[in-house]
Image (cartoon, rainbow, N blue to C red; front, top):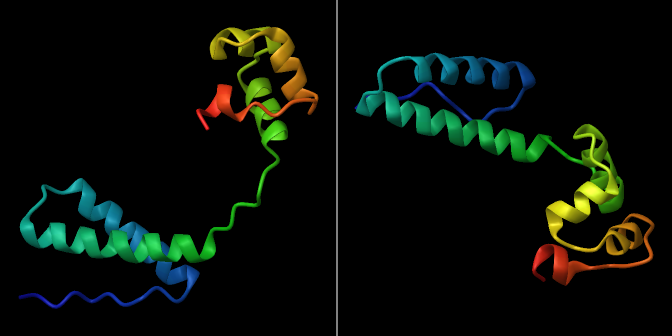
Amino acid sequence: MKILPYTLIKTEQQYQHYCRELEALLTEAPTAAAQDEIDLLTLLIETWDEAHSHVPAADPIDLLRSLMAGQQLQAKDLASILEIGRGTVSDLLNRRRVCRKQLFGA
C-alpha cells in the first residue's frame, strides 16, 4: 500500500498546493489508488474550508432583495414565483410580516 504524502493543512500555501493536486487527479482516469488520494485530499481541503471560510450572517430580507436585484425581479415577479399575494411580498420586504410557513414550509 502506498503511503500518501499528505498531512493536515496548516497554511494557505499548502491548501493551494493540495487544491492543485486534487485538480490534477480529477483530470486523470480514476484508479482505485487515485480514488483514495482524491478522497483524502477532498477531506483535507473540506476540513480547511470549514475552519477558515466564515460567511457572515446575512439578513434574510437584504439577501432576498439582493437576489431579486441580481435576477432583475420585482415584487410582483416574486409573488408569482412563490404563488403568494403581492401584499404578502410587500409585507415581507418591508418587514411587516414573517411568513415562514408559506415560504419555507416551517
